[in-house]
Image 1 (cartoon, each protein chain N blue to C red):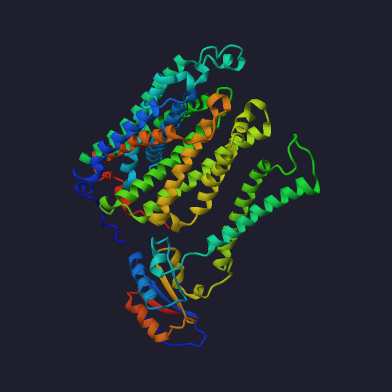
Image 2: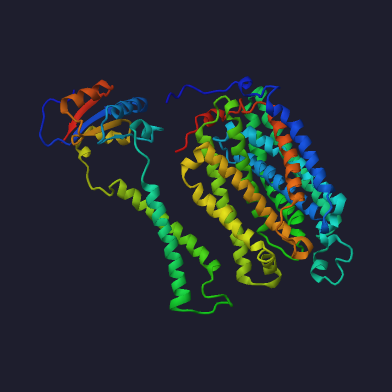
Length: 181
Length: 403
């Protein structure tokens, strides 16, 4: 079990746990040990794991707010430009800049832009789509989508030390710890 | 994280002691209420303006009671779980509904035709629109419908109120099942009766005008007001609720309140835009009356204060979880809900010439009806544990976590 030899091009270390409870407490320990470049992989959402991992609040809402307000501004600008500047046309006796008529479009474009910002912003923050990941070289990692729970700590983490990190993860109750190239 | 530990609350820990302030409040607030109502009803004003002020105050508190009834019924219907820890507070507000409806009776006795001018002598003469509406809009049928609303509001609120208390003794899950089964027909009856209540008692004060959106706007305002009152009650009482209420319940209540302000804006704007677009004189006149005599300011205050301020002010979860900001928004939105009803009803005095003045009658009515409301809510809160301790979904609510 564990590391038998070392290679210089190591990506990180992968620890396997057998229950949600175990990984929850293991995450708290990894967090408290001060690791930064690491993540947890579970077959289903584990309630509160983000707190156990010490993840900061997502930046996504701010992207959605800014892009959503851009949608609002686009709708106002587009309609005002069309109706009042580019092609002024009297419609049922209303003024050219008839704001009540703009509101449905303002609402629609705000929602549309927000939805796009939420979906594509989420993908961008998660760096998706990603065609491959070093963790896929692990034989055991496939069970992350079945019945096993994993923690992976990357070698680029300032606190990372091949032997000590391996021992640390084993000490947290991991069933199996391996290096990922 | 342990799945085997089921959290629970002891009834004795969450029952208000007989000496507590809330248990004394029914008498104190009741006295204030009676004094306020007497002041409002006995002060005489031109065109019965004191009765109009009293109508607005009654509609305000009734809409909140109805909002709480909708809340309880909808959450049974949807098998909701997170709200169980705070449902008792909503039940206390819900139980005021039929009594708030009864408080309207002085208007019938003291000057019905001053508020509902369609019932005045000679109103029908030379008025073809009113003649066409007369089969529906006559005093006899109006009061008969009032009786139906009273029966429906009493029946539904009494059933859900008593049913929930019955479970405190037995914890029988069938009691929840029964409430769930009756929630669907109750909701249909509530929706119809509250809509027609708004048509009868509020919209008919301008009897030439009509809007099919009126009922849903009345619902939206009251539903939002219910969450505002609920948030205030939670903040006042959570120390006495055995740790059942967490910041997540505050967040949940705040989210509902915030969402409904947007729903209110959506319904109110839908009514406005269709009338503006069609530009038919008999419809646009209603908005014209809310744009002259100084009402334009209040129209803008509503748009800003009832929509833009909560929309951006309550967007952040921190505002909804932090007690002082949640309290401030709740009080502000209750004020806005009053202004909404004031803005809907008051301009109709003297055929569209009512002025936007908040005078003694408005304040006395609000304090009076509000006093009775507070007395009733505190009375109902004192009668049972503040948490539905044996509800089968309580553990789900106690564990409720909201990101």
